[in-house]
Length: 212
Length: 232
Image (cartoon, each protein chain N blue to C red):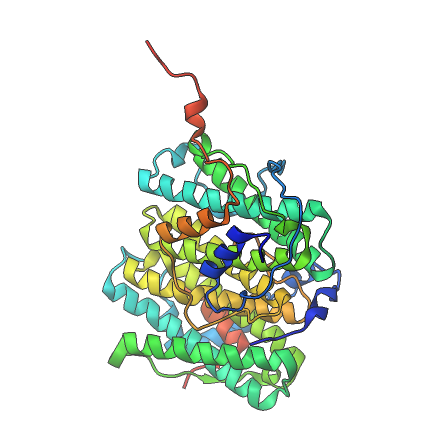
């Protein structure tokens, strides 16, 4: 797929520091309220970050977290494509990302089988109603996915780690892609900081994940 | 293109989705400058390795030291590539900016690994980038290939890492390399995310691809070999 012509090289907004400063800062008070109202999520994300040694049982717990991430991404891109009036490269990005997230979701549901947790509900608010709000929320969501997968790397068995590694770099590509579309610095950090399960829960709650 | 037989072979092997398989421009002089990256160890060392000091690194399993040195060579390759491109003055606009940002990051990765490995770090090889750092399109095409290669390399090694500190660092760098790959792809005008799952690559495959570029013109040596031997 060819996304863009040679004129892309001319774009320059001279604001290299902007990307990092615009990342979501998770407000504690509001989020504490959101998370407190979500018993299922609270239980799910009580998952410690200093877990025991990797085991298949622990992999399954972590995959439940990842399942929520992927459900949120699929729902987010579906709604945005229907409601945000996306066009051009931003629409091409959303379509590609949705296709990828659906594949991730299917793989994780398959891995969990009957144990897969319920699909959450969502209230993305304005985030799926306009192109600019969508773009910013997509950055937050993809960064959360990267940080969430990375944060569990040392808790996973090697086999599951290998599978997760195949997914996390695609999430990272999405995050860079959607930044690059607006001419932002697409890789603002020299190393990606991981998130704990709790931090992922808060971030997903802020973006719009609710329970049933 | 005829000017870069090795480079073309490299792209053919590294080009997963065929997007790079188009003409590369010719540049005349091949540079063989040694990278002179006088960057001090910055915040990355601390972020990447946290409290893991050089002394603690002495306790790393030999297999992890081996993986870190393998990653270090790839980081040397990337860092020198961006530094040389920046110095060539051939890049402009968003591509020049991306090269600056990504180059600084790759240099920070080099320093973080060198810091961790201490005297066990392999020395920087000498590079010859066959002129691809001297024009924007060949630069971008090579950047895409190198970044995609780094993603595959880190992904191939991650499950083999034994130390949790090294693994945490490696995954944090792995995803940054993926961001770089996507960024360079976007600038080059090809899709930044080809498929839902990025494949890993073995060391043997990565080594074959890197060797095919002839970008590395001297083999890295262990620093220790340059020290006087104890003969008593």
